[in-house]
Length: 437
Image (tube, rainbow, N blue to C red):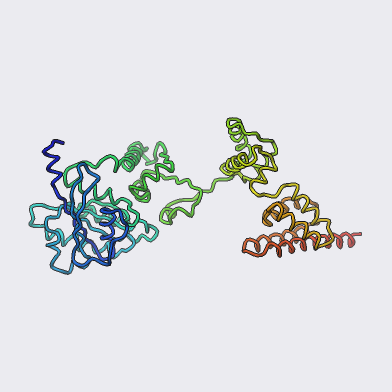
């Protein structure tokens, strides 16, 4: 750009007039762009408020005026004055309020009528606000596309609350008015992704099946979400792209995306799949580990490789020697020897008080949870040759105790109930033996 052109753009003030129904977030949108603040000061706008600022996304910065017009201005005769010398007219609607979108037809027709005889026509665009409330969305994307196509409008979707797409939308509109290109820092990630998606579309087979997958890691996805909602991309390219979202916590995905997904749960890894990778890591990191330590990691992980590595790291940092005892101690899980001694007491101790005191003291000394003890005892007693009716009764009582513990009942009371269940089981075995003799 020459010095003359540079000076020309430096002194050009762009006026953006923002229209829409009340409570669609027009004032918040202005404040978010000018001061990066999610809230507009004061209450509702009366008449119109003109805010001065600069578009810092372009070089040199472009001075601009944002004319925030009240939502009730459609019924007044002042709208023509507010729109005077506007370079851009931005129609804002609430994605969670269908009525605010339906009224845009009236707004657009009124603006077109005002500028019908004017030689200079403003650039007009739509902005769907409150994309952070995607789970409450009431305006369908197909309706937005239809309206934008009908009036040849630019179309944006974002949130004044989170700042999503706000800077990009304003910068893009101002750049279009001045005939400039948007700096790459504003569009690199979305354009790169959309280019890849378009290439996927072009490379698709005749039946529409893509020839290669597009995989995004967490870092790339976060960059995208600063510029555009991931739901926008999914909706835009759903005809030629199949999106695969890999996550640990399904509840953290908004319902709007969940409703478009088929959920698959991967099975836990087999021990044969974990051990080779575990041994490779241990060898490269020079970790001292025993065979029983490896077995303990496998048993506690439940087929979760991440849990294996996290437990391995924590145990190595705390004990510098990964064995069965150090692994169980690190995670606060009962040792096998402790479970064996507890089960021996439950099976053989006739004095209820002595048995209760022994287990309670061991729990306090080792910091054990009764729920973990129940889980380990459940595994052990299935190897004991109980009569079927005795085993069934005992398992039901243990399951009831675990359920009560999960709901917040006292561990002391449930420990007493566990000891009582074993005493009753022993009595049933004695009665059965006498009856059979």
